[in-house]
Length: 184
Image (cartoon, rainbow, N blue to C red; front, side, top):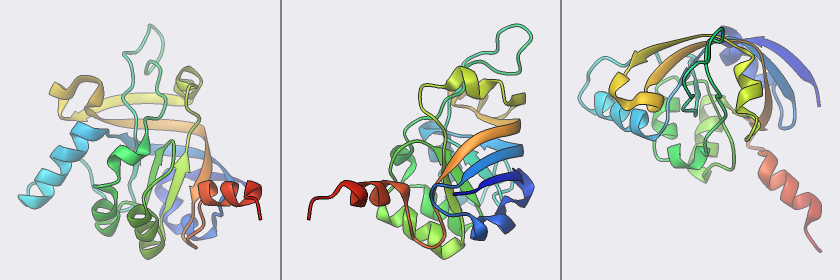
């Protein structure tokens, strides 16, 4: 397992080098989107409407941050369960999305989309939202403000700690972990 310091805008080119279990310290622009925002993004795609951000090479963090306390860019910003976004992720990856950040297992369809598009699935630590917030230097609502904490936000992160949970070779940390403890 290696540790990579990666600029978010270069992740698409680096994703092919990442392997399950590698650590990534990510710096750059990422976007938050949860269930409700994903539904609206998919509706915009179906209706050929403009999207809130360019999907090409983008990274979506499945999070709904809390309001920012004084002197902070954001409140607690931990990951939400990624499986709720499984119905949307393959389409978004086929349209250029490079990576998703969340927690927990993904569907076979998502893993297949990661391989097909040479992308990556990164996990953040659940329950450590206050710690993650320390790496977030700016936060701007860019779409669907009416969704509150589930609005789409543009974040600038510095040295945001992540773990490669699924790589473009088809490996994922969840199956790999189960194999370690499987009885013969």
